[in-house]
Image (tube, rainbow, N blue to C red; front, side, top):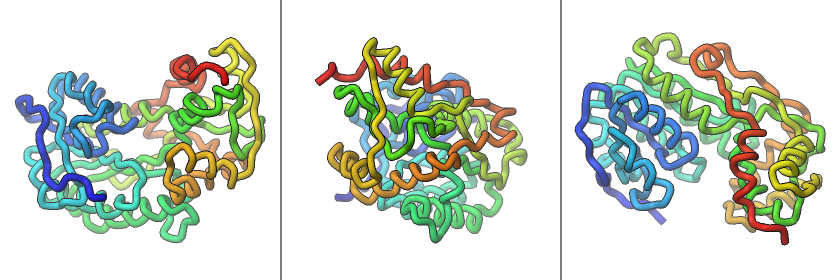
Length: 316
């Protein structure tokens, strides 16, 4: 099913010389970027597939934010929203239309003379044209297009680690059974990152006056500490006041659970490829120095669990 074919402005504040555009504005990274830009006093065009969704509603109340319903696969409609934009942040979720959508966004940014674009990528180690991870192949194709077509536009790609928000499946799923279930050992650690830290970083990056410092870079972004699945279970236990234990399942069982929760099978299968890397310690990479200098990630898994665990349904 195709998304609406025309761009539509849901709210329209006055624009100023510091206008930025954020694609994927209702997502975890995109919404954080919109908030940080709004806090800075900039005007923001927040692009989203639906201007009426619950996730978009809070953005409409932010100062200087213009919510635009837009289909990124409709290039002609997309081109119209780039007028006067001084910087762009591309944070689309992984989907089958991703390559077409993100290439269109890049092309429109270049055509409009946008000076700087920050793209959200995925884990660098599986971003390649022959990756076993399907969305890893998507990102590789998009990044290749960006390098080839950017022209005078400066650009940066952010490569975040495993997102803390991936554990919403715990909060609204397995915690009701007092377990966390993944195909990893309890002592296997990951330097998980809060997507809001990634959004804050992207916003601060486009606000920098001289983007040449970051041009052409692929920057790793990890959380401030490594945490194991067993430690996560203990944090859940403390937050909920009852024992939470870990269960190591098979990759196939995890995929089946994700599909049952509403994930497309291809995406669940692609996500599951992270677990072998997690088990082998390959998701312990640090943030790149430029990230630590500009906007070092601060949010911890302990803080994330304290925030979200209380929203879990009561025990089954």
